[in-house]
Image (cartoon, rainbow, N blue to C red; front, side, top):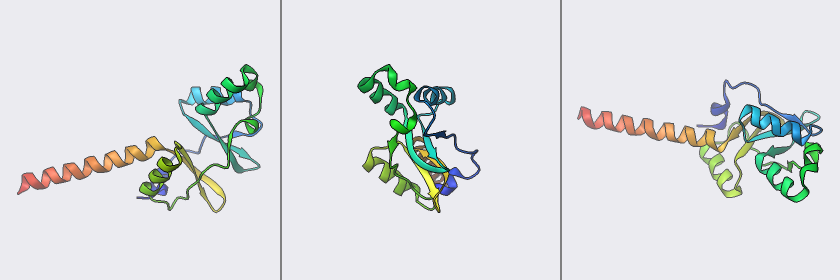
Length: 141
């Protein structure tokens, strides 16, 4: 299974611009109940803004950080995958790099965004399906 199959049929990705304030972006994370958002600049992904970014920067810089643009505090040079990447390869990458969100980029254009939760859900569903098939097989014998 590929990442492309996971993101197939999804709505467009929620994004922010590098000029969006931290306060506004944090509000968006809370409103949408999401952990991170890709940050765009001139139509290309420039970074990722996550709950962790808010926490770390608040501790480091205080409440003034809330009025800063995302471009100043986002995680730059995000790790990405393309839609042909296997789910297992993406999970391995996320585990090795200790990240929870991956932009999906094809030919320089972001086409999706996946979380570790999306990929773990797929794996659990697959394992449960295999277990059910095995039970059915055993009961039929």
